[in-house]
Amino acid sequence: MTKTAAIIGGGVIGGGWAARFLLNGWNVQVFDPDPQAGRKIGEVLDNARRALPMLYDCALPDEGALTFHASIAEAVNDADWVQESVSERLDLKHRVFADVQAANPAVPIGSSTSGFTPSELQQGAADPARIMVTHPFNPVYLLPLVELVPSPATDPEAVDSCKAMLTSLGMYPLRVRKEIEAHIADRLLESVWREALWLVNDDIATTEEIDNAIRYAFGLRWGQMGLFETYRIAGGEDGMRHFIAQFGPTLHWPWSKLTDVPDLTDTLIDRIATQSDAQSGHLSIRQLERKRDGNLIAMMRALRQQDNATGRLINAHQQALRAPLSDSAPLISQDRVIPVDWTDLNGHMNEGRYGQIFSDAADAVLAHVGAGEDYIASGLSYFTVETTTKYLAETHAGERVRVQTRITEGQGKKLRCAHELIRAADGAVLASCDQLMIHVSLQTRRSCAPGPSVADRVASLATLHASG
Ligand SMILES: NC(=O)C1=CN([C@@H]2O[C@H](COP(=O)(O)OP(=O)(O)OC[C@H]3O[C@@H](n4cnc5c(N)ncnc54)[C@H](O)[C@@H]3O)[C@@H](O)[C@H]2O)C=CC1
Ligand SMILES: C[N+](C)(C)CC(=O)CC(=O)[O-]
Image 1 (tube, helix red, strand yellow):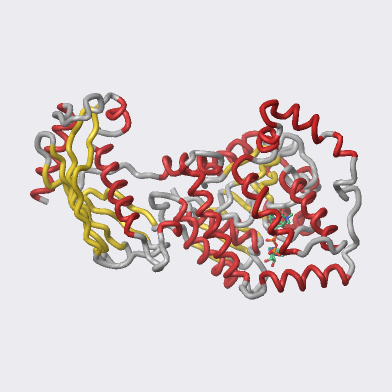
Image 2: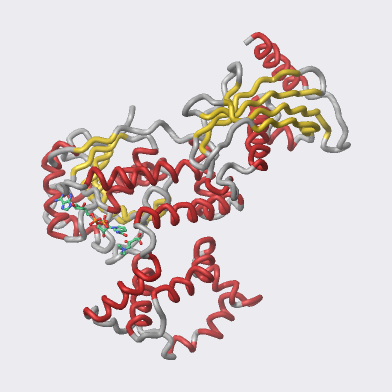
């Protein structure tokens, strides 16, 4: 049955949560007194619809229904999960929890708070056991981390089910073992932010120079290895011990101003805002969001290829999402969205990627007939010996497509597939590919007859496709 999330507070973060839930098939019920909330969430959702499906090589679940409600009680009434994302004020959050628990006493509540501890959030609550911190990162629909912070009063079962729920949304719940203000990640971000404010305040660097220092170097390192693994390598062959021996003493040198914070005077705020306008003011926030999303997708897809960190998480989520093929005529061998890194300077999908999608389609067909990973590990496989591709219409990033495949020849060593790439929106045929594969032994690297079960599966699908 479709699950329902109530989002209380539909700003930057509530909108991101709404998109994450909706695009993973949940219904979403929003309460936010801001008359602009519907428009703002709609715009975030448009960006999310464009971005999130591009991360995967298969289709996401059908989108859930989004509704707006006139009160907290109405929004949470039948909800399976409540995500509180109101402004960062403890009194406001307490009032929201009171209203939620009066309307739906059993529902678990996650708070997006950047800094409050769960114990602080639970003060005065009717049922503290249902309340925990689930702190996400912007954009919530793309970045997987959620800091999951219970207090000793939080029900451990509610924490376990929250963990499972977040995983099913493709997120990475990091269970924070001891509650602390600003959790783990924001403590780290705060350090960099404070140091950066000093650098601008002391007129040592502009906002753009600081951003360049991050994005041309350690920002790239952090995205795939974090801090400690990176510094282990920086220690050379002797690793962390050598790193600390060399850079330990510098901790006592004046390399940081973190013991102190600059006053946010009007002059400093003006300087930061003016420099930031000069750096990025030519783009609207929505344009910046789209630029950010495209970069994030390209980086995360690269990490998928390496099966590393966030990439490994997305690969595992895709395994859970991918529906098995059924013996239809034709087979639906691919159902996906064209990702942003598949397009070229002409602004459409590059011809090399047609080869990729038809190759992925063939892999799906081979797995379906029993010639997948285990079969290949046993020393048998198919090699492609000929393809003829016709490019019939342009395809663009963000478009949902499917590949329909018929087995047109399936006797002996030969397996011939006729693939058609179809645009989901209007059924237009975008390309076709005739692909001949020959069964081989991976020991001799020469052709040989397939195993009996694979031969039977291929032959029976060829018969089905000849008649269907
Ligand atoms: N902006 C960020 O980068 C991040 C923020 N957070 C946390 O998420 C929470 C929300 O922050 P943002 O989305 O940035 O703020 P925001 O200002 O964009 O959105 C807050 C929303 O709460 C609504 N609101 C105010 N009172 C309300 C009430 N009584 N009931 C329902 N809605 C109400 C406002 O109308 C507004 O739309 C905060 O706790 C913040 O610390 C967490 C991660 C990142
Ligand atoms: C600035 N911030 C403290 C609100 C940041 C966060 O909480 C997480 C993020 O997305 O950077």
